[in-house]
Amino acid sequence: EAQVTQNPRYLITVTGKKLTVTCSQNMNHEYMSWYRQDPGLGLRQIYYSMNVEVTDKGDVPEGYKVSRKEKRNFPLILESPSPNQTSLYFCASSPAEARGEQYFGPGTRLTVT
Amino acid sequence: AQKITQTQPGMFVQEKEAVTLDCTYDTSDQSYGLFWYKQPSSGEMIFLIYQGSYDEQNATEGRYSLNFQKARKSANLVISASQLGDSAMYFCAMREFEGGSNYKLTFGKGTLLTVNP
Image (cartoon, rainbow over all chains, first blue to last red; front, side):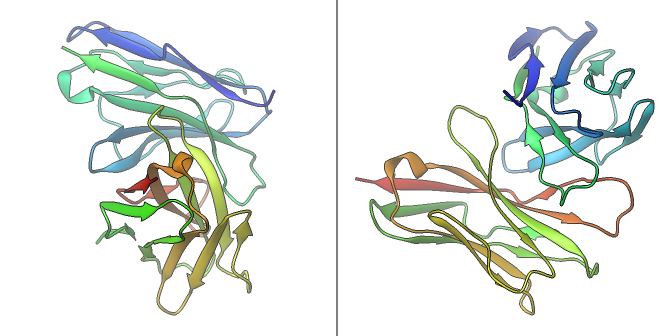
């Protein structure tokens, strides 16, 4: 089954404790992206990657890091999480030549206390 | 200025009736795409329908249709014969094709649709 997977689905952590949210897709998509969703704000892009070893900032990159060592994986790293990073996070992927329809993972609900 | 505006924070509709969810957009690109996604209470984002800026006909996908009025920069979603399972948050989104290599989708703030039995 073609899909984007994220782990963990739910995470409660404390301020300053490094964490990684994994994202993997099995559709051989070149493009991958991370969004965060906050009430009343819709979804906003954090980082994106056009291909292996090619990443760039989106609209709200502060406090986040990413890497793209393999085509299928695009982990999101929070080196020192803070309460304002409490949010619902989505990973998405898309083939490079497509019209832009993105396939979303199931979401990761993160709470930072 | 917001690129995607959804002016209806919440909408109610009776089961089996049609409903229109509004979306207006702002772009200077000539080539762009418009999307609608559904987010049920379980949280996942489900792609519904796509309209390209050069598409001459309005997009349709089953009970979903997109009322595309390019001159007015609007891309309203029409759901016909509403079902209880249509109750969800609906997001309008845009991709601007002239923006380089980022396939970023810019989302509106969403409309919460409630279908009443």
